[in-house]
Length: 314
Ligand SMILES: [Zn+2]
Image (cartoon, rainbow, N blue to C red):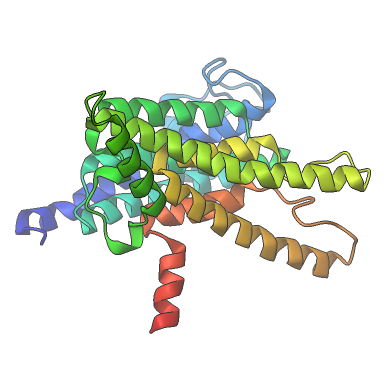
């Protein structure tokens, strides 16, 4: 049970997470604009795209500056889109929700860096995919690298090593594979948490990617059969689920992929019904938002399938 002091600290903890999310969200706006255009993230510094006015520090405070400037550039009065403060506010709320999940379930704080990074990456991937129909490799590879560093440096950063609430516990594949490997390696090499974390990461990355790669190949084959050059599932999507698997392990990766496929199927069906055109499933749909939704849901609440199962069994 949370102690009295931890209860009084909670609002401060959540507020801190919210503020941190707003700051990261402000940087994410830059990432979403510049990364797909191949521009540097640091140079040139933020400026008004209309008049080139360099944004001063007080004009760069998340949400507040936009409100103070009433959504206009202080030099040329050009409108600044409401999407910027909305992006900052959204990530602030998500970070507060992540912090809430960790606090409520008494999970170690070491989980938060990975949760924060993955959520920000997925929010950026979803926005870029919606607009440009790509997921930049840099985003996916950076995520995999962070997952690797966390696995090697921070023992508590992986779900594997935690006492999890039932909704976040889904380790049939990971448990079986790691038990088998532990038995296999018992005689030859020392079995420590770093080794286990690394295997959990690799298993998650490879299994989740392999599952989506099958869809990617099937889609390609089907579309070639119909003499179409477009792709059903892009390789960017495969790398994105690989990144999710790297952070969360094989079981979460596969459940999240299942959720994404279900959402994609529903959206594809709706698209065909509403547009009345002969378009295939996933044809014009960006897949990253469908991956982001169940993944972020997992981080905040747990396995979506668990809740459906609970609702049916009631
Ligand atoms: Zn301006």
